[in-house]
Length: 298
Ligand code: GUN
Image (cartoon, rainbow, N blue to C red; front, side):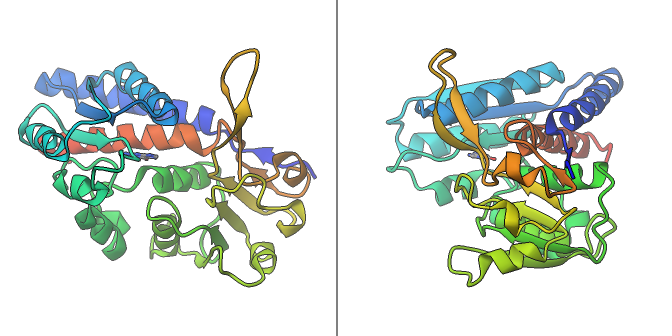
């Protein structure tokens, strides 16, 4: 068997085209477009490349995008004041502070400072709580888990009653995607198991999965023999394992041994070109939704 590739690149293009359409309608109806403030502190190479892509995508769908780069040594109080400025700006509907932040800044304080109504990452405790209570009613879903769910749904994969195994328990991916897939909803209704570094018999759990979602941050962690034949494999890992000497670009590897897994799985996401582009598309979707709420269209 050779697994079908689930292309996040292709699916995200469709979603971005849908968003662009909505932005045009908003402009025609209200004379306004969604506004996104993207704050980058310092010059962490991975963060620079993520933010560059987010900014480029926001501009491509017609958003008013403010890229706000701040020095590595910005005092915490100044960063909090900057967030407050964007919280009060009626033309800004989404605020994103790229993580990680330098060690002298308390990340929790920064996340808590963003208005839950502009928290397009859905990292604020209010939005995390809304997700726990009912995904269908949450204004914002966290971008990577929302992207994973879209990939699954748009690829026609049945989730109702499916065994979903999530490898990893991070706040950004593992915990929220587990919660989302277990919700009483047509896009979910799965039986979910979360496994992590202290799980006994990791391989045995993975082998039960109809849908295996891997977000461990360990290159090649999941071996082909851990995959149930025909299963769907969603690889969230984006591990920088080296640099291409010719292009100078980072060499990326997922958490799954892709070439071997492809011979066993039914459907699989590649790295790059799988979950990554979907995360950005969902950030745009959240920003659009935020503006639609403010303008009374949702
Ligand atoms: N750093 C890595 N992923 C993310 C993300 O989704 N949002 C933010 N703000 N920072 C990140």
